[in-house]
Length: 69
Image 1: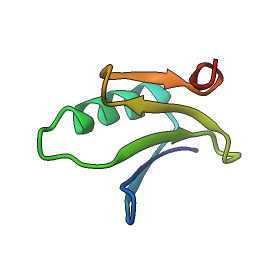
Image 2: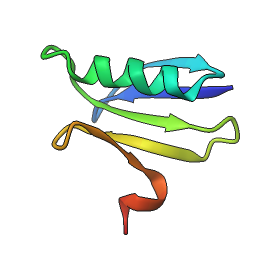
Image 3: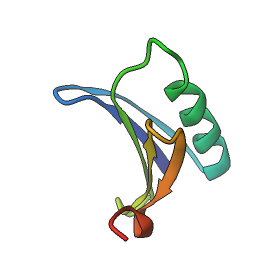
Image 4: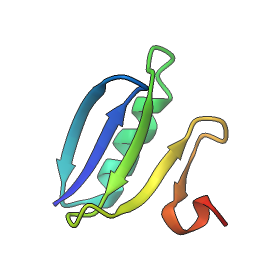
């Protein structure tokens, strides 16, 4: 089961679980495009490895392998 975790600098804002990565990415994009939304999003594999993070400045997902590239 994949998970999408929202957090800010101090708080865990919640986690959404799904077997469908596309659904979590779509949900996360919609969440981050809400003007009232704060924090950051990270998409994880069931093993705990990071798949991607949402970049609020470019309004897109950044794949884990490309974050430090």
